Length: 247
Image (cartoon, rainbow, N blue to C red; front, side, top):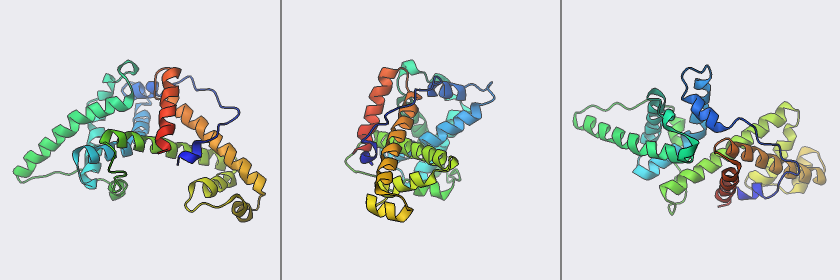
């Protein structure tokens, strides 16, 4: 998917003033009326990378990895562990992996003890969640590298969903469809084939693809800016993300 990010938008939008660290810390503030909404956002954004990481790091089955991921987020919420996170302590991904080390090992020990006692309680989840992590990706990557790679693809997926919804709301759904057919789907269509399929000119196809790439970069930059402290770190993180998507 690295080819999606090869062009820049000529007029990138400014970064929002409100950062994701305010969202993270807001999820830890139980006095806020919006803490559940912010926690739900964090779960959606990090569920899949964490699930992959657990499977690779602790050699779990897809079902157990999904169960442990759900248990991790339950403990993160119930014990309000987010109060321990802060931008001064490093990236939020690093914080999550450190907490996973503690909580997953504790949970695995608990399950082992319950199995010896003849009783095992497995959290019930949607089977599609476990199915989503059946593919382990490249066996040459470390669990840490795999976590970051899945995090990057999750960021791109979220950016695409946001842009697709925005274009649809503005009556421009065909723009995204053209981009998807030319730059994402496999096999992809040529500009000429897209023009014939969607009833536009080849030049319009080229313009749509260029614009969507730029808009995706703008959304990705905003997402990154919302998860770090400072614009210098944001640029480093953005370039790192692009490198992961280009692998």
